[in-house]
Image (cartoon, rainbow over all chains, first blue to last red; front, side):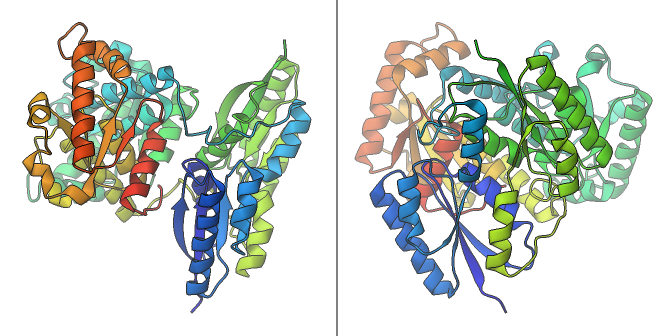
Length: 273
Length: 273
């Protein structure tokens, strides 16, 4: 059996950039096993030396060379971490020189810029969008004029987490309208949604998965019964199809993928926070 | 005046990895101006050719060479995108060869693995953690035995977005206890929190910023008055200090940074979703 390889995400900031790319890289090597650890805020020589010691110790304990994915902007800190003997993957290094040449500008070595200090406007946009998502989560508060988009689907199809993700990461005001059994019997789009047709996106889900999710929430209720789930999903899909509203199944999709596809379909281009 | 440089995040998946590292790189070049765009799900030759055309057109319109940050796993798609003439920054390429050598394993070229299909367990953990955060957001539902951590602070200090972020990205059950004026007069930790001391982390905020935030929420209320904000913050900080509870000011910190620091302090190591 191969050793479990220690992997460290080392950064002078939050380490999110290093972990994001590191995680993406590791998923491409499914024959190896990894034990990952985050070492954020490594922004002084002392902290870099501490990190190096911890990384070296992990390698000795696992009897294998550790891997470090680092996004430290200050090269002297990276050099101190490298004294651990780990394989060093510097996520910025390969791209700085081509960018400097292309832009005719030297990079600035300020730390923690990507996910660090923020201006008040950005903070506000994210928080307001999140408050909006949380207060437009039930189909009752329906000030949809302000909505950037509205997700429609049966209860527990994945609307709430998607709305919250879109708010947090894109500052988007995403409302969420759960199709009730009454709505579904009507066989057409609820009146309050019709005037916002261009903001609508449907989420659907495999009825068996829906049944599992609802069982966890209200075990053995009528709401959770497989028959109920099957009927609601069939009615919802038929209605959305008839109304010409784009629809995505969340059964095998991550929240990130659902969010990306919704934005792409509605043609919304917003930077990611 | 320099041209605004078109930047495209191109991916066969969501594009989150490309955008995360691309954004981090661009923040290091503050002398240039960028117009960024996401081109996700570029997973067929046709879509790659469409992307190349769009990128080329953007460069012609801006009269400057576009920059592409790409995370396409399939090199033949990247080659098609490169026909746009853009500066190509491939976020995986520089790291694959050293990793293959170190791990003694060839990478697998499956697309969209990082933020794509998910297993049910992962989905469940995220969703359950988010439901937990949303139902333990008010200091009323207080089933804190299940909490991984509890954020404490005055109303509007940044607790809710941090809890939701921790749930979404780390599957952590983060509860949130708002210190009420009554709690603050007591000058000691509310009884219901004392038994969970090792899960507590305090968030504080500059009173002027707090005043601005509360004004937006309830303009000209007593709750929003600068004097109220000053008093509450001073009382909360004094109490947390006296009780020996770690505290962080959210005034200039991003949600990501707050989350990272909370996890680091409480010694919680969870992979990021």
